Image 1: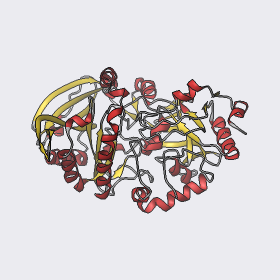
Image 2: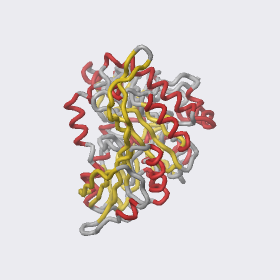
Image 3: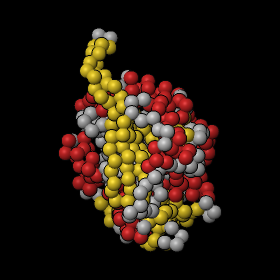
Image 4: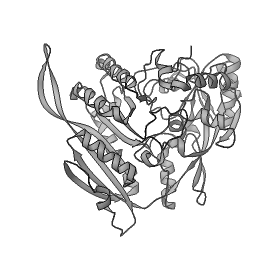
Length: 460
């Protein structure tokens, strides 16, 4: 079977016109462009299975694409089939007793939140951007500002439906087909395509209070974050590194912009109508530089808090720039020297308009997803350089970001694989460590013809 014959094999749409193929040739990174030979909008898992089976016989490749928030073309391919999973977007039902929701992989998290919030329910972990798909984030891990309590989104899935690279449809959980269950979570579609999921929910309160704190000392922030995490004193926690530009200083024969770095920390507490959150417990003993602001708002607005920022990004041009994001999860003890060194070498203007530096203090023990690689520590620190760079300057930025990536790995960090990943061959066994041989074995078992999501992991 060739690509033109796919229309007779699936119930969903098969698009082969140039405009449709070009529309699915890139991702949020805007650095990699690969044009598929056909775009398939599957109507069901049967369609996905039919495409994969045809690929095995026809010798073409298959990539999966949800909202394409990756930055290195992880869900793209040249000349093969691209599965547009956004076509499978049904919320099949909510079990309010079991606290679960059954959804298609193409359901966007924002739609699930809007569906369950009126029931007093919410997914335990949500990424900052709710405009991404369930299948997409489960395939990466899915980190959020409540991960220090509940792990990743991939930890909060009860059951998965998937089509493996063999073309076999499976239903998998921790008790049923556990090897397939572990293989498709946080593996970027290397072994199978997630088509549906039963995800956990939790009961929530309708309102939140967010306390905006500012730190002028990274070590103090880390000490306070450790106390907050261990004491489970808040419901959500997020942080950044923010430059206060000081001017230009000599650097060799040049002068370079430099900054004094500050560290906002936002602590959020859920509460019922008329209930007063326990601020005293949350703030007890903290060493912040200044309490800047306090905001009371509905939980729905809090969960969508970055939508206003996304509007600004689109208006300013940041959204249309390249996004060579470098995100890593660091061992706690290595975090301070690593972050301090990187920030001391980072000109604040290099982030571009809208670019920012992410901090993500979290527990290292709340996740048990085998293929979500992270340091084996009680506490971990996520760190992300998230620039928006005009295309003409990308060649200047990428080498420096790769240097920060390599330094992080040398100091025990693990890259978050949705970002800008330009690994050399030796980086893959370094990233997966003792699980590298298992990773290759899973590929041989579940995708023996290597048809799924090519051009990313180097197995040879």
